Image 1 (cartoon, rainbow, N blue to C red):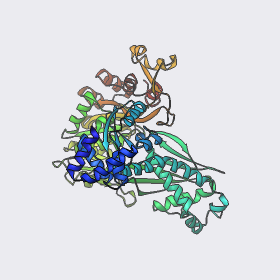
Image 2: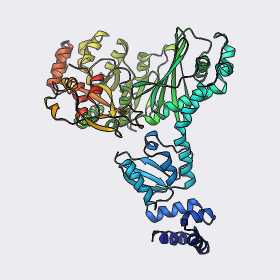
Image 3: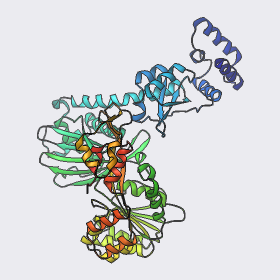
Length: 567
């Protein structure tokens, strides 16, 4: 019946003539082949004609899948390559986490739909595209991972005598030649590809005496990847320094640089830092992928009254908002999300950053340039002459920057910044340590958020388990009913590289500076007194917030313990 409707619609749309259709039906009767395949094989209709007709008949989207289209790893991990090829389809994961869209060459193939449903347990939605375009995506995405791994191993297997650099380490000309050798260029390119594909934040190149180590930081944890031969290491380091426009002849001093490259149709920024060690230079590359930047506070982890109150404070006419936590705790992402909320045609939003990590449209972003004397404090002085409504300072590092920021808030500006402290309440003593008067801190501070990142349980291999007594000893003093909770952990699967965790979310300590807190700060109360008052006033500590995520099945007890400060 559907086939009859399809034929009728193709004739009505003018995509195929009645004679051509009759010929195709005769072949179908003789061979038993699928009608749409016959139309394409006999060149009686194009695959695009058939896909468009399917779209109109079944009221499903038609996707063009151009050369810039790319599946994410979590998407192509849903369906084995053999299944994708057999049925001519690819999966697109939905944001709701309970359904997927299957892009099919033949959306009438119920066997394909049933197979995908049994493999994924997701609700299935359909879309249609041409067989050629679906096959091109399968080739590009499913083969990419195997290509990267095998290619890296191929380079490792190259004999040092053939492609390695065995000359004088001080011979810059020879290093420059070898840095442009095909194996070296290929290794660097493939490693960058793997880093972006796996969502890595950093790549570490570490030299040893007889070997070298390469590691990627994914979801906050470092993991080993295929290293190059030791003989290629100097040339690889030189290659990276050339890309980052660093001095390849200088190997005694730490250097910084940056470069950009294109991957799957998007531009990725890379910051490079080198440091001289005993057996050579160590390089760390920070991957800044704007496509992976989350600019929604709810997606980061803010919820309920804290999300509502944060938005209200952001829209106040003045005051200081601080994000605190160690390096890698997601402070910068939260700041950019706040900027995304602040920006509007009616506000002048200005930032001072070292360096500018991500560009936010509608925000005026200024990098510091210490080499020419343009530090945070100097930038701030000039920015305050630019009539700003809101100012974001990448980090408060010294008394001069802190004092200018606080006096800016007194003159009618909302100021956002970061500070390195272990919790929210210790920010006040930190300000005293760098020389800021207590009265100034008390009168300007509006909100302090301590933040950490916990790894989430992989949804694909999530399973119930019973924690041991040692784990429960951490939770029960904070939540006496913890014995009645249901606990989960990841067993490990191909989607999480057998780690049991995949992705991260933030946990918070949300301290609003109330009149009672303000009074204690003014009187230079110690951290313990401030913390007791904050908890009495309703502040949820990092440990409480972390264990609440455990109760909700998002993370594990051990993960929460590893990042939280236990009182």
